[in-house]
View: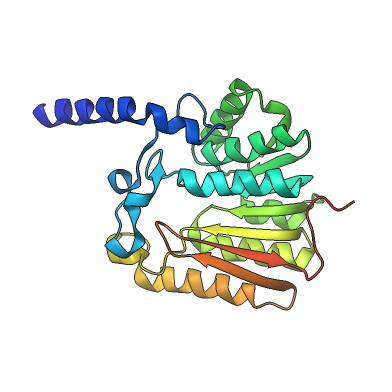
Length: 243
């Protein structure tokens, strides 16, 4: 009981302290908390978790979501793909940028029906229902059959599926400008002891980096800070917003 009270008091103090920080993320929904990344997710010192903030263990760091939001504001995509919605925080960041552009639709693919319904409610509560289309099915099934195409893809489903998802997109010509992968830090399994295994994570990174060297792609960049991310550029002349 004492530990529960102490944890609740710590969370309450965090909420108060984070109020000024929320201004850094103008798209943030009311229900999201700004917490120190080091308090919600394990890390090794080289990942510099103290430089980052996040809502919880399963969400993407706010700095990464801010970068995605700014990228969409800059490139003005007509369509954005997201695989793995989780609590919907990433979807709201992406859709808020589309709304600010007065252009673009986020296609969020999530296999869990309860999470799909939650995402629809949360998008509507933020006034973003017309900027989000929820596809409640397996990402691989959706990408193998969809007639939709996307300027930008944010791959944030199960790590073991993400390279397969992008490979399908390349084979079918579904992504025209950029693909972004989360949780790519090369040191990830030094602090995460249960999942993924070092072998699984090494394979995930190797598969993503191999796709970055695919002749249909034109380059990539990587951040190894916090949970890490890799952005791959698709096509030598591809650009978001193209007619």
